[in-house]
Structure formats: structure tokens, C-alpha cells
Length: 314
Image (cartoon, rainbow, N blue to C red; front, side, top):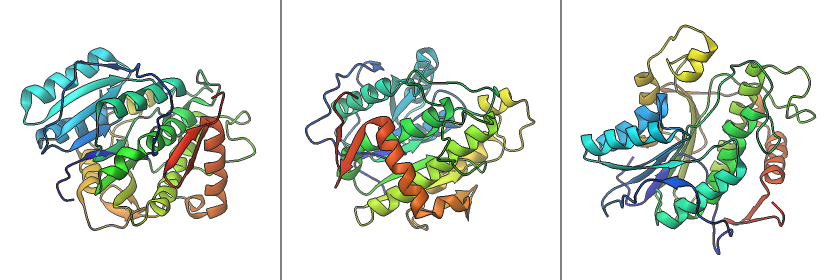
């Protein structure tokens, strides 16, 4: 992928002409202003595991990295490591994806702090363990919101910067674990399992990728999704209690291929380094339309021709 002069998010965005009216409140360290020749990269969930490795790689090649997570101490450690190693720079922002209000504040803060966004990597997520049904502060099934809904909201709110920074790229880090969404019970109130919830949220990310690719065709924004590697030694895998089968480095190699390669078409899904086919529901236009409508209702965001607004009361 060619060297960008704008901010690149691995995520999906929304145009913010006129703003949404949320005050910038997300935690951040002292401003670290990117140099004119630096790409700006946002990696969500980058204080540990795969996200941390990606953040370090972007920093090592000279990019300005927006590090995101919930833990300020770990976030500061990643930023310090990137800044010390060089030649890139970094800054940390705290936001909990289990809160749509925090996601909105996070996006508003980034819009205030940065005038470009070259790469968005939507990596933040929560795994299948513990095997219990959890709810977010918004009352939604935890994995569906943390892994998908918050990404949907953040990407759309940041779309203005992504579109202004073309050629730019959005990468959604999904999984080979995919299960169709039951639109009669999206929050899995019946027959719940952590594995089902996780797999449903990851398929939703891929469906979102296809929608974005269609919506952004011809704009210069390329969108891709992937299963990076099977059972890397990340926190979510260790909580599951399974033996790792791949390294974090292997997963990072796969993500960086989607970030940098000009050899694939927008909207494609990869398993590791190879192009693959996702669950059949990902290619079902009617199912994707249902998911999009539901996502707009749950997040309160409405978009048309790249311009978005929130419904009153959200």
C-alpha cells in the first residue's frame, strides 16, 4: 500500500459535517502532533496482544499511532515503548466499548485532535469466555456491542476524516468463528453460549465490511476483514483455556498484509494470508440490510451520502 499523507483507521467511519454535539472527554496523554510526512493510524484495543503488536509495528515504520484501550497504565507503557524505539510516535486514549457514550466521546475527541486519518484497524474485542451472558451499560449483549456495535458507531463517526485522507484503509479484525445472526433473538436471550455470541459478533463485522466496501466504492477508501490466526496467545485465548496454535506475530503478519497490499479488492475476507469465503450470511443482501437497520437503531446514528446525525434523545 502506498505511503499516505493522512490518518488511516482500521475501522469504519462517518462524516461529521457540523459535529454531533458531544464534548471531548475521552482520556488522553499530552498531545503528540504527527509530523506532516507521518501516516496517522488508529488501532483499537492496542494495549495488549495482537493490537499491541500492530501498534509497535506501525511505530517501528515511522507512523503516528493512536493507541486505544481501557487500561491507562498499559496504554502509557505502549506509548512509551513506541516513542522510545522510534522513529514513529504515539498517543493513548482511553474508552470502554461497553459504553456507547464513551465511544461517542472518543470519536469526538479524535476529531478535535486530528485533521487526518489514514488507517483504521478495528481490533478491539471480547472473546467467548467466560461462558455467561453479560450486558453492557446500554443493555445490549456484551460481545455484540463491544465487538461490533461500537465499531459500527466509531467508524461512522470518523468517516469524515477517513474520506478526507484517501487513499485510506479500514481493516476489521474478525475471526474464523462465525455463526449466522438470528434476527428474532439478536441479543441471544435464549440458548445463550459465549461461543455463539462471539461468533455472531464476528460475522457481523464481516457483513459490515461488505456494506462499507459497497458504500465507499470509488472513494479511495479500501475496506477488508480477516481472521488473523487461530488461537494466538492473547488474553481472550488464555481465558478460554485452550492451547495456542499460532503466534501473535503470525496474526500481525496477516493484518499488515491487508493494510499494505494492493492485490485485493475492497470488501474481501482473508483467513491468515489467504483470501477465503466467510459464512454464507455475509453475502446475503437482505440479512445485511437487516443488520444495518438494527445497528442504526441501537446506536442512534443515521447516515446519508456520508453525512451523519444522531436521533434526538440518543
